[in-house]
Length: 69
Image (tube, rainbow, N blue to C red; front, side, top):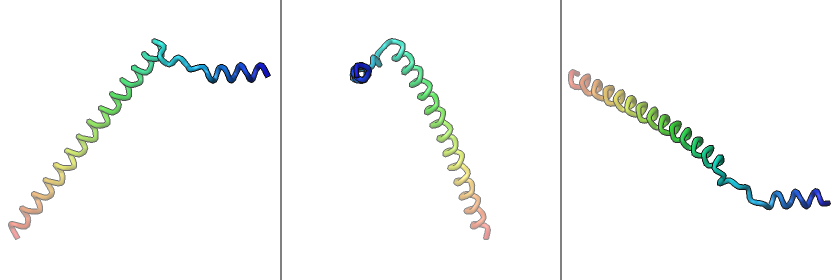
């Protein structure tokens, strides 16, 4: 029974998440995530711009064809 009591006390004790090592690790993970998100947003924006250019180009070509017919 003492073993169970010890485990319960350990679970109830708050974990020290604000240790300097933990904070540094979290900051590094956040920085890596920020870089990933920034890269993803940049790629998304580039794809959107490329798609818009292609749509506009196609639309202009269709309008030119209509003028000649």
